[in-house]
Length: 222
Picture (cartoon, helix red, strand yellow):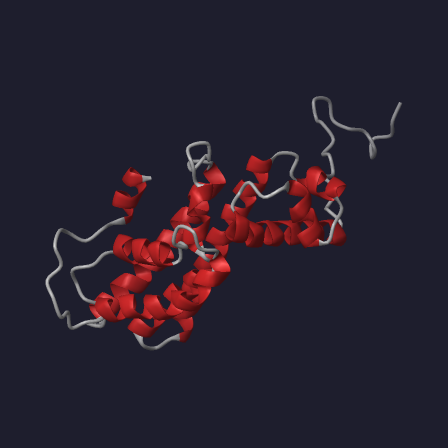
């Protein structure tokens, strides 16, 4: 019979200790996600799996152990991009005293992520409503909406545009033209994005047709 000090009360289940992943395992997973993001931008989501492992500098077994199926890897890449964009938006808001400069800084940071080139990942088979994706998307939307509202409140951003207008512009300007590769297209991205941003700055020089695009509009069109 166990002593009183070591007995487990009837009905209690001893807590299972979940082992923490080793540091090298965490690094390998991060390298795989980063390599996949780069290759998805360059070649599309159908890039051979073994090429992703080679770019990450790990073996195929490591890739399949972390991501047995391609949709799981795509999911993780999208999560990482959303988190990185949110961090960029929050950093711009914290470090830029000029509200329009903060918005512009975020837009150029988003262009660096090549969000337009990654849009084909979000096809009909992609689960856009997965709970952890919804959480990250809402964090990003809140951060970007804050940039837009503060710039408008300061009179630095024209009042007839919405968050959706900004995100559509960045996405379209970072999507390579048909028949061109991302590397060929890259030198023009920031140049054309700045032209777009100049058109958003107040005071407005024209009257826009239609109404401002909201984030809700983008979700309905997705």
